[in-house]
Image (cartoon, rainbow, N blue to C red):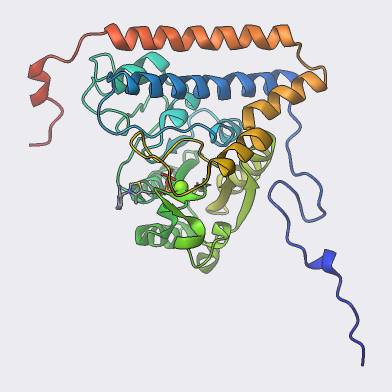
Length: 346
Ligand SMILES: Cc1ncc(C[n+]2csc(CCOP(=O)(O)OP(=O)(O)O)c2C)c(N)n1
Ligand SMILES: [Mg+2]
């Protein structure tokens, strides 16, 4: 007996950046908001390029993990939170700090190990904090910030302060045990935390496919009743739309939410990674077809929301801010040797 053909459409899961009906799940941004998003993403891009240059010149020591390619994630999420909400992340953190409004001069000076750096030049790329800007680091132990971010959310709940904690981590970190202990507590106590998984496809040199039994990371909270969704992390409007939904859910006391941002890092894992585990073509394809900044720029021009001249002016302003930060970070003095004995737990 012939079997009736099943409706393929009905079974199709929502694709990242689309809702179930196949409509683009993107936020409608005002002209001002879209231009601001362009400017802020560009600031991160130029900051990271400059950090890469200073590293090559020997001005930055130690580890340095660049965020180039992933800018739409932090900027879209920044647009979804309120002042006072907290952010915590891993070691690929310069973009998160800039998105939180931290001063590029202070971040760059920390990279070059100078006294005006956010950790007085003693922490470096992975160890910066600003409680003033509600940024809680900067963590080098993979997955550690997930427990800490859950703790911040617990404090929010305890204090009943209405705040939500964005807890960022990578696809590699998503396989860490403490992530699931944290999920359990967050789900049990309905903590106001949004887990933002930045799936940039690789953990050092290992692709998600090679390391993960379940590669749909948005499903990782199912055992703990934590809803999740995959998001086009290259489209700042899609990030903002998903962020709005997740943050509202957490703030309303309904509990944690997982957003798997599908993104991509253009550079190696850190400055010392020759990235032999992927092809040049793969990187070029993403850069030419999905670049988060180029997409916003092209849209602003195509929709006549901004002129080329206006955007060039922004480009020049951003370049100036970054050049000044680099100049400052190259000339600021190093910490006094006596600082070796301060800020140390004894
Ligand atoms: C507990 C622990 N295990 C291993 C490492 C070494 N390590 C540093 S980064 C990293 C990969 C993490 O990848 P992912 O979470 O995808 O973040 P991404 O670097 O892609 O942003 C590993 C294994 C570490 N720092 N901490
Ligand atoms: Mg990764």
